[in-house]
Image 1 (cartoon, rainbow, N blue to C red):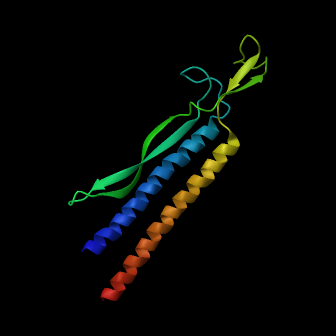
Image 2 (cartoon, rainbow, N blue to C red; image 1 turned 135 degrees about the vertical axis):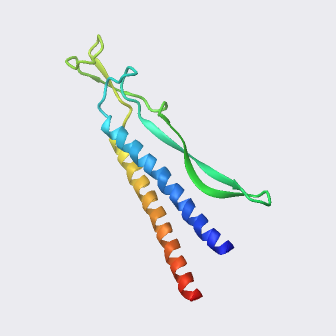
Image 3 (cartoon, rainbow, N blue to C red; image 1 turned 120 degrees about the vertical axis):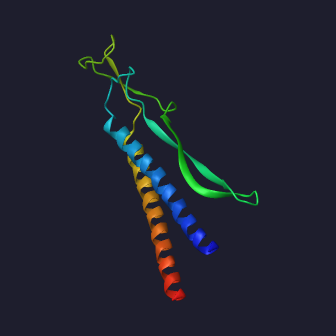
Length: 143
């Protein structure tokens, strides 16, 4: 019975990875969609968002902590990269000097993040498929 429990544990861990990467994919998509928004309801340009992951630690009966997967700790604003300022006096959001502040979203970085997140998501799918194949083999051997 412990082997079956481990099998499903591995599937649950892969599922947590897929769930977390899905949040990252959605966040990157939101960043790309808002990459030209110069005025938000909060005021100022759109702020790039980043996803922070954290491990899920499970305490065993014997007191040990084991990895139970990963989850999203937070989706927060990227306060480390700077906004881009472009001189465009005709823009409706230009300041008195004709400068417009654009979001701190870099399309190249976002596409790289998107590719990484999609590949991590696919890797977790592969892990789950391997677990299913192993379970299928185990069931056939038990017959």
